[in-house]
Length: 506
Ligand code: XMP
Image 1 (cartoon, rainbow, N blue to C red):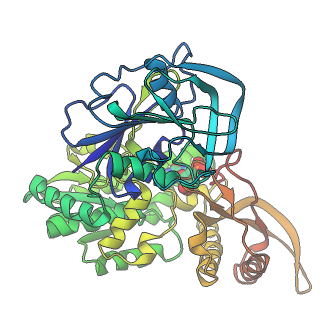
Image 2 (cartoon, rainbow, N blue to C red):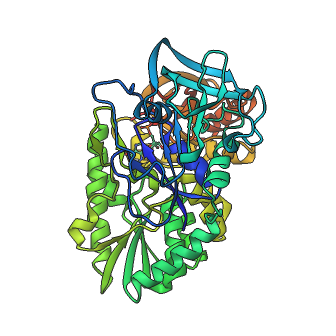
Image 3 (cartoon, helix red, strand yellow):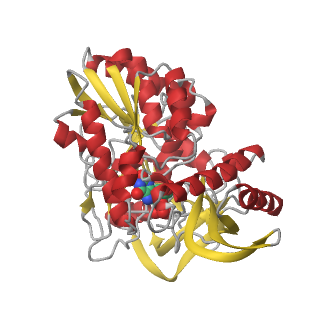
């Protein structure tokens, strides 16, 4: 399949470039600036990302682009454009104060293929501390803005383009069109990438790779592991065994509901109800990291014990997705490998690892789920932390606190669905606070617990904003919780953004 390579120089928006290219129907891979996969026959073009560094910084990344420029079409974005300019003899200078925000393009070469269909005055988003004050000899400036003389340039005979602005962000109003001009018009993408084509190709590859082997997969109830399971089920059917562990800290009725959903999907799934064991190990433990460790270790133990009953299994499948494993650069030039897996299971179990979603961004996982015919409520489920309510019950955990947290959470989440608000928030839940306060019910004085409602909007959980939910909705949820959940007499709404707060309270 055709692909575009995105060389990552450490910008916060590198993944966004990847998502935009995929949305345009072209597969792409993000690789560190010094790891260009030379020799890959499927490459049709290269994008150089932005960077927090200046090209003149001591530790700036200066890869040689021999073997890239002249061979593939290249688009440099921000630092990428400055790097192209720097390497070919242009001049880059600090602008004094960082240029950050909206600007409007003046088209100097409107017939340039990168600018096809872009309007005069089109709004773009700038974020840079250096500016290209002179482009290299032979290059042409194709667009400028009020303050940036060389906002876009090209060297058509070598198929090189550079833009000082960020076409990948939404504030660049025609940014997607510009990327489409590059990927389709210039690189010649045949738009081979789609959820449907991914399913067909992956099912074919899984059949080939796994043959008659047996595979075990740990289901969490979340989108990623569920989509991975349905995909594998399509490829190898009953040779896939899924294990779904109830650690007792799931949402109200979630264990039963999710298990039923999985069975309806035709999955071969074993449910392990170990809630009591988890709660007894957590008794008296208040420290958040210890709670996480206890749950993680117990999960491995319960999962291993169940998995060891499955004879002849040779693979462990996981719902790892692309953002979990993109190697990204940090600004000291070292490459950080961030790899996610379930508590060291593969090492202990001597199983080979199968990660069928490892190339997908989160929104693509959902599209694949839909293409596999999975029900909407499973595919568009909010993220839920692995340790579940354990990190939403602040302090120590008791069965009574779990009941309160589950009932209040159920009222909140059901309310979000009933009011049509569920899909507008990234994630929501109820936090049970370790405080009691005075209230009055009927003629009685009460001294009971407080819960906080948390609902955030986000696109990746790295940053998040509190959701501006309607007051009438909050009033109704608060009344219902106080009236129906025994032990709660006060409800608060968390209006903190991340950063500086986090989504979870522990
Ligand atoms: P924070 O609280 O760091 O959360 O803003 C970001 C995202 O991560 C989830 N989260 C976890 N997920 N195990 C998980 O599997 C954990 O220990 C954990 N802690 C936080 C959180 O729900 C949010 O989606």
